[in-house]
Length: 152
Image (cartoon, rainbow, N blue to C red):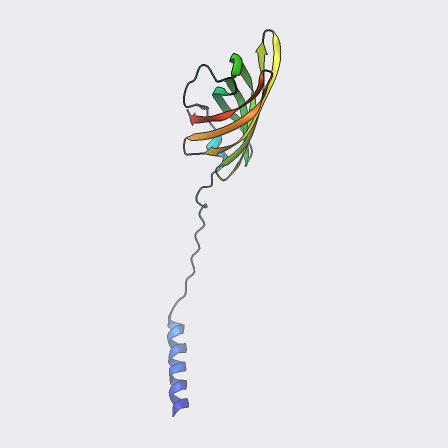
């Protein structure tokens, strides 16, 4: 009798499972905090104007990326560094999530002498801003600081 009841319950379960449909749905989304390199395209400019940088910093950053690959962007760059150096050149960045590893190579004219300037850093991409810690060298000495750029 036990075997008969067990067999009936098993048969009933098998019959019920044949009437039930199973569905598996997968949705692909981007992980939170990731961005595409398209987020870098546009004109970026220092949020706060500081006409006279400290002796060991740069200010008035401007970056306009014009070339891009799936993970990087590059374009024109300018800044004003210690000693009134007006710097112009190129900067490029590689995006990984919301972190931008970047570098800039530029030239400044100082009393009819060209001065090479190089800056590097690891920036943090926000919605419409980039927080840019930087360090580097000018012909007047090392520079470092943090600049916040807003998308214009």
